[in-house]
Length: 154
Image (cartoon, rainbow, N blue to C red):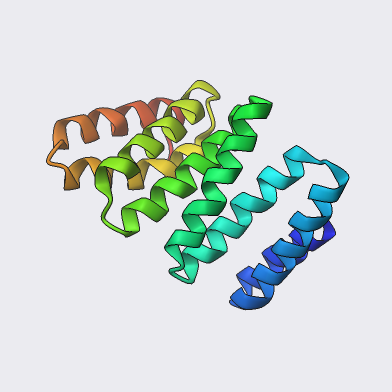
């Protein structure tokens, strides 16, 4: 996980190419070790940095692989994070309906887990997708639901 941590540091420093290299090396090592949970986490991180570079096809691929592993592990916390990240990638490409599907899954898991941080991350993107699709009343309902989990944040 040291390489994954290094990738995160490099990403925060804006060194995206170096971050991608670190995440890819970390993934290869975790693959050899058979660490599915680690692979899922690294793929999510890789998807995020690829998103920042606007390499959307590669980002989507990493997210889909991360989701598949997370579903196999039944790791709800991970799935909330990666579905939200994937939804944000789709939203940035104006793929509103696809984004909505992913963001709703992330929201509902974070809501069930009563995760205020997750709600802070997913709710703005979810309401943006709903508004883009002309579903303002549903956007308001999701915002109200988010307030139930994170009442001091909105």
